[in-house]
Amino acid sequence: MQALMFQERRRMEMREVDAPFPGPGEAIVEVAACGVCGSDLEGYVGTPGMADRRVPPLLLGHEFAGTVLEGPDEWLGRAVAIHPLVTDGSCRFCRSGRRYLCPNRELIGLNRPGALAQQVVVPLSGLHALPEGVPQWRGALAEPLAVAVHAVELAGPLLEREVLVFGGGAIGFFVAWAARRAGAKVQVIDISDTRREQAAALGIASADAPQGEVDVTFDTVGIEATRAAAITHLAPGGTAVFVGLHDDESPFSFYGLILQERQVRGSYCYSDQDFARAVSLCGEVPDDYIAHVPLQEGASAFDALAAGSSEYLKVLLEPDGPSLSEVSPTCT
Ligand SMILES: [Zn+2]
Image 1: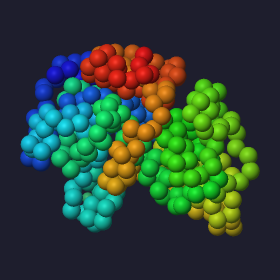
Image 2: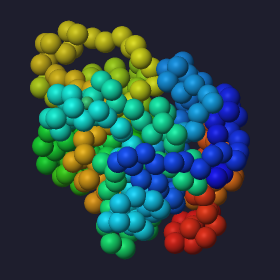
Image 3: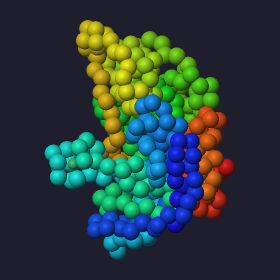
Image 4: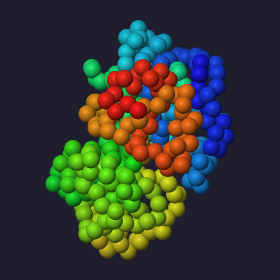
């Protein structure tokens, strides 16, 4: 089969690779669409934070959906989104509904062959049927949406709460969308004019710098400036949720935390429940600013994204690109 391999830093290449073979408890999914994640892009470029977490050669791709090609009868031919974390199922986290914290977790598209290919092997436990009538490519939005659903869940009740979301990329936008859906008054903070215009076009308030104090902040960037602002713009007793992974270490004001009794929470991935919720929502999330690119043109898509020249919130690579993109009103 054809796969878009991450061969070395800043080089993706279409190659013929062996078709995958499913083991016990696994299925083969024919990929309809796979999103390019910010973390994949940082690995591609080799940013300090992500260079060690994405070492080529690798078959990337963990945001994907498609059709079950091989597997148990009840799944054959079904349209699915895939929870890409593979866990041991036996540790205390797996047994308590938080398998995303499993010490033996692996990610499809990092520790296992990913979905920037025609086919991919997935565990049956990761299969989630798409809602009736939802185009398969939308299932590829379930993974980043699940990250947002989980982060919003960790923030607690948001009805009528004032919320700042730092970063207007895909995760920032999905967090803002999910927080607003939970009843929050949301503003997205991003220094990019393009990102702010996109947020505005999608009906979400935005600014290039935060003002005042709010009840809840989300940092989807992960650099010193946004992490600091996510705390200093928090009202006493407020909660900051950290999602962005750009940098590992950043300075931190403990007095600001202790004396105002602010809370900080790290948010990583999603539970099975969060993922199921994201799958149920993936037909509803706005599809503006989503690019559909044939997988065969994936190498140039990575280049364009690395150069920062993409105007899209999310690029979906599709093995049968042209025919699939006809289902989208925003096809390019
Ligand atoms: Zn486990």
